[in-house]
Image (cartoon, rainbow, N blue to C red; front, side):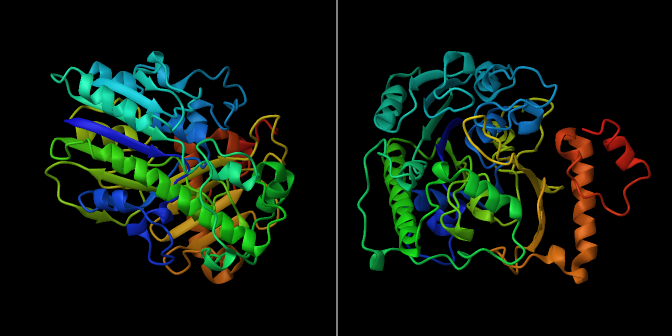
Length: 442
């Protein structure tokens, strides 16, 4: 089966119109139309809310810590050695599909690690990083290619990532969007203000990297302007996606839409990504397969980490061995785990905070590497805006202990040794666990 993978950078799950129950200011008619014939995952997560680690996991099906890629500049793990290009391996997305007989092409943003894809990544690079001309390049390739072979075409858009330049008052690469008066801008989200018992580490990182985020002096109307601009960028990329889909035969082509991570969009007074807020770690995930009825899946899935096996299942080919997650189309047995690190190389100041989040059913447990209230526990069904940190309430100690146990088990099973010293161990941890973790103290 032909497969078209569409990506849009920093496209938050809540920006997809059909996924929203509140705030009607997003407009995504083309993606809505695709969603109407797709399996729509409402609880899909990235393994890391930052471009390069997420995209590296996407093309390999392995956690960022297993690749040694924990920042946008590669981010070496202690003792991991030099980080190679994740797309060069035989089990990576392009090479795997090429070996299976697919005609593979890549257009747009790669960023895993280099900005644009190359032939060494297993794809024919038909358009470099940049949205202008991307749709036209895809259309030309589809018209000129050998029609005897099935294809895997990746169309990877940069928007709405350019909201980063807007926040910093910098020129926007593909042109500005129309601004609106504050009175016509979207309202602030219900969880705009910092919650009681919020993690200290996140606010410290935001202040330390103020020049990167650009919102330190934002007043409420500035945040509303940010939300209006973000929605306009979402609408702009949706229009480009519509132009691309106009040339696709959906009766013979599977189409998957996903993002690498979300955007804070003023929730918790946050913009961009990296923090473990739901707005940053949830992604839109649509899987249209000809002949498969539309469906909605509300259980948590590792959408980005499980993209490679999902595409293999859609295409009808075997997935590589040793992947860290199953296809999202298969029943999900375990929790979803998200990693983060604010240490984005020497160019970005900060406290070097790292963190892990574990989502299982309605429950989400987050632990940052340091600071007051570094443990967060939320019932996402009752508190989707993460305003009540149940980790400070004794009545939820049993749940908290259970989530600590699950995260420890996951870290041990997946070799997440770098963060193990930052875990809060459960009371029922095996005897000697603490001593073994700190066998080498630092």
